[in-house]
Amino acid sequence: MAKGEGTEQYSNNNLLTNKPVNPDAVKLAAKREQKNRLSICNKLCYAVGGAPYQITGCALGFFLQIYLLDVAQLDPFSASIILFVGRAWDAITDPTIGFLVSRSPWTRFGRMLPWIVFSTPLAVVSYFLIWYVPVFEDGRVIWYLVFYCLFQTLQTCFHVPYSALTMFISEDQKERDSATAYRMTVEVLGTVIGTAVQGQIVGMASAPCIPMPGDNVTVDGLNSSLLLGQEVNATITTVITLDQTKTAYNVASGAICSIYVVCAVVLFFGVKEKKESSRTRSQRMSFWQGIRLVMGHGPYVKLVMGFLFTSLAFMLLEGNFALFCCYTLGLRNDFQNILLVIMLAAMLTIPFWQWFLTKFGKKTAVYIGTSSVIPFMLLVVCVKSNLIITYIVSFAAGVGVAAAFLLPWSMLPDVVDDFQVQNPESQGHEAIFYSFYVFFTKFASGISLGISTLSLDFAGYMTRGCTQPENVDITLKVLVSAAPIGLILIGLVIFRSYPIDEERRQGNRKLLQEQRENEADSETDSTELNNMV
Image 1 (cartoon, rainbow, N blue to C red):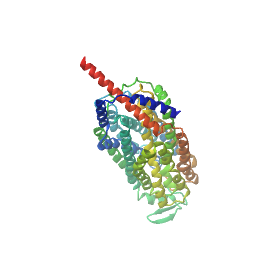
Image 2: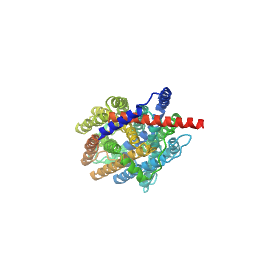
Image 3: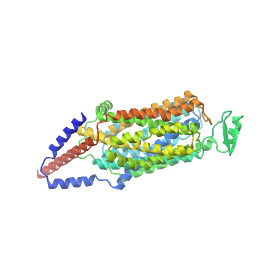
Image 4: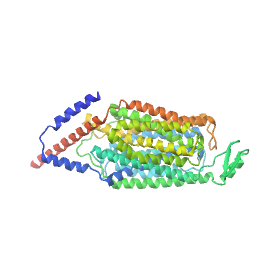
């Protein structure tokens, strides 16, 4: 079916191109191509705008669960409610903000950039308050729930317009792909920064654990078999108190808030949003009309469903890896460095995956890149705890993480282009496609994180315990290995039916280029006619 559609498109393309060559048209096309090109500075400024989402998302993903359990001292059930409701609310806000963005009027700064600027100050304040432990205890669940949901809403006001901005920085597909590669590199760098800032500051002031009778705990080089847990814990807390740990989280969140603001300023002053001068936007539509629009486009559905499962796999790994390192591997003092290695490896290999998808195609890159992490997910739970092996496995796993970062955002513009080719009269819906993709992934991740935290509760997780029951260790192994591997395999099976290969993608690019040239020629003819009149 896809092949037939491609053949029909190429025949239409031939009909469009069989016309006399006009020297003025050639000059106009060259001028338009030059206009669509982005400088390296433009691409870098655009890419910097993606860092805040990843920096805050990485800090929340890796550290919020362990923070709520061991620092804010909430029980696992309450923590699961906060994580699930926060992610679910975040998912709901994405299509809502997407529709509001698509209906926003054009300003002298564009349609997307004002959303980014006005949401930033409130977003950084709410983010800081997530990492603040209030003096009262009875209302802490409400405190974290309110500010977590508020931050997710404000961050959505930043990220949905920023994601859709990809379609408005240039009309050239190659330029958009290049800018996306820059963006993914900086976003992975953002995860490195988030992991480094949060992990290193917090890691120097880890929350003291409560030993259980019979635990072996090292205090200042002395290995003591505990008979009186409270006595040894008192010795530990003389080194690092819980209040010092709370202060470390405040310092880390303050540093991240400062980076957030700087990135927003660079994006605003370094990127120019191009107005849709040659395209008439379609009539506004309701929420359910938007769902029917995006769900009615087969390639979009298959792309979203495939990445839904693969993204869930990495989110499960991200949400539980800190606990896994602390309790299953026994690397409480090194987990922040292990996370940093994963993100550094991902950042360094983004250029490789950009080259790979250009050389062998995006669909092939999905299979190779996503499946490359599976052996290392198996190895990390099968090999006996060893710090050196864990670092090696973490670096190799980061290579797969890089592919998971780059590919969804590189392939979404292809689906939007495919939709525009098949529906040339329906324009201005880019934000809807992006927001619904984020909606599905975030909603599913909220369910998965809520279930994973509840699973730890059922397994008998001990808040601030130096060790955990055996059932907790087994549960953590499932959450960081078996479950993610199963989700990745399901996602790869779905990708087999994804119809946009390199041939169809290039055909869409040519057809869209012809459409834009015809629209530009029509505008030129209209202008000349008006001048004559």
